[in-house]
Amino acid sequence: MAHRLWLALLLLPVILMTSTAVAQDEFASVDPVSRRDKPPKYPAGAISACTSFSTVIIVNVDKSGGFTKAIVDKPAGNVLFDQAAIEASRHWKYYSEVEAGERKASRIRIPVYFPEHASCWDTVEPDTPAQVLEASVKAHPLKWPAVVEAEDLNGFVLLKSVVETDGSVRLTKVGISSGWSMIDDAASSAAAQWKYEPALVDGKPVRSVIEYTLYFGKGSR
Image (tube, rainbow, N blue to C red; front, top):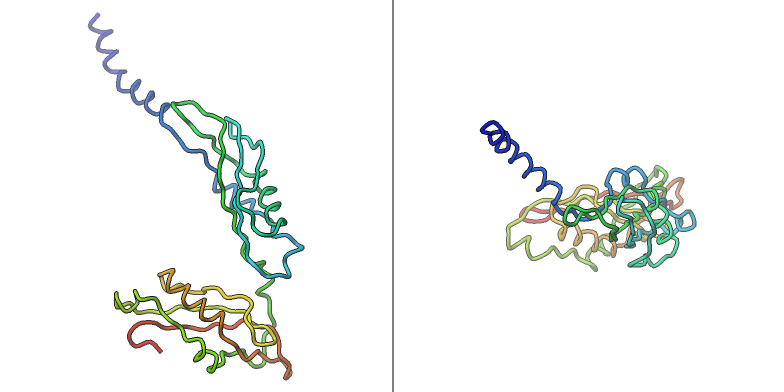
């Protein structure tokens, strides 16, 4: 009798731990590795637009995590991207919701972002690089967020822009972040308004990528 009591007391913590683990609730989710390995394809018919898009889809899965259907919750503004997101979602792995230790059919809301196609950054090596027009910078001065002065912040943002043959900017992205998103956004917004002297090859303007550094805080230049 004493032996059985001792054995029961010994096994009690194990039984309690197992019961707690099974009963633990879990939210439904998409497996990040499968999503990374099978990203949505940028629609071929939209490549020339050189524009980024985002959409939000809702995926329904059965209790075993199997895909059943997907719908668009927030359209991208271009149906090609909505379709590409839904097609990609068919190939991802999912984990269904666990409630009171039981798996159940679930709905998962998933934002999907499409950066501009990589080919939009393909340019030739110019004889004369593009450069920012000083008059344009003066007309649209860069205004750093108030936090720069308030917190006495110092640093820089390195931007990359695609300059078209007419001197306009089609794309701008942060090459090296300042570490503060609001500062990066301020730099990108200002750069998008500036005009540029286009790059030249054999004396003719060509599309090119320009990199430039914008400093903020004390001692900026």
